Image: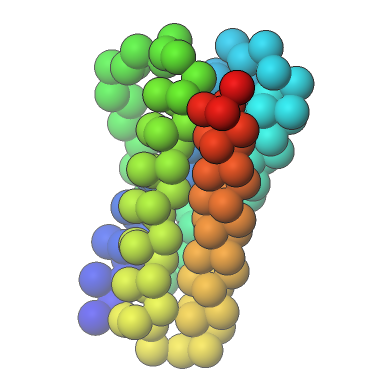
Length: 136
């Protein structure tokens, strides 16, 4: 079970680093100040999540390794960017809910619950931005 937890934590770390990178890159490309500020804030939150996940990986006996994949196209229409972020948030929520299911102690359950809450907030805000932009 511990190896399953470490694998889940590592997958979460990958998602958070990807989110951190893309939120910051997209923020620099967005003209809408509200969306730009939201993306900057979410990028900071993803950085915090990544640091916490890295700590949990090490505490659980795992190791952290880094790899860089080729850069993907980041200059897209704003609605496409938001849809991409929504898909990533949904993926993170499902992953962290699985973490809650397989965790053996209350501290890890609380940790994953916090991450789920943060990612659900991101999802709510992004959905609101998406509706506002689509309605313009």
